[in-house]
Length: 65
Image (cartoon, rainbow, N blue to C red; front, side, top):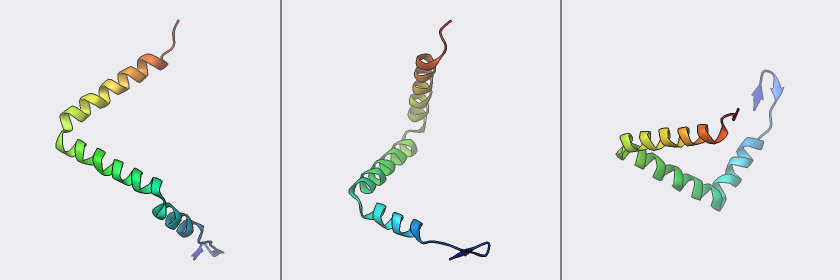
């Protein structure tokens, strides 16, 4: 693989294969599918939950004078 005349490595291919074969990747993929399905089925509720989480984080991390 050559990029801009330099010899490239195949590290990304090896890492992605290891990640695909690992159990953690399956868990992350399954969780991502569930989150996407929830957002697709209930967009208003997911927006409200996102706003509430943002306000809570803002209240926790804001400066206290």
